Image (cartoon, rainbow, N blue to C red):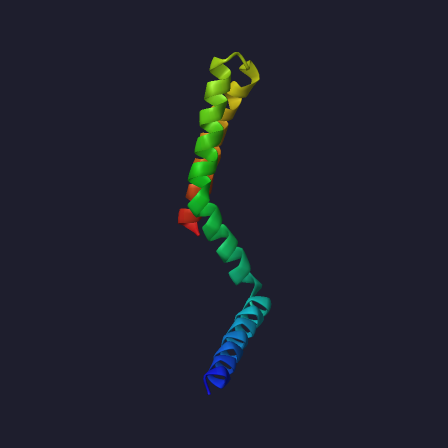
Length: 86
């Protein structure tokens, strides 16, 4: 009896996953919205590390990397402005 209940439970989970997949396929805007939310969440750390490492390498003599510090901060601000507008 325990085996039967586990089969029914796994079948129910599979149907939920298929339903979720069908929902995303019929509403592609939800895929873009999910990707945009992840971009908003992780953009701070990505651009902060770019700015930090660019500043460190600039101090070591790589003068071309100086432009990445304000560029990464501007890109982060631009993404946040778009995120607040959407």
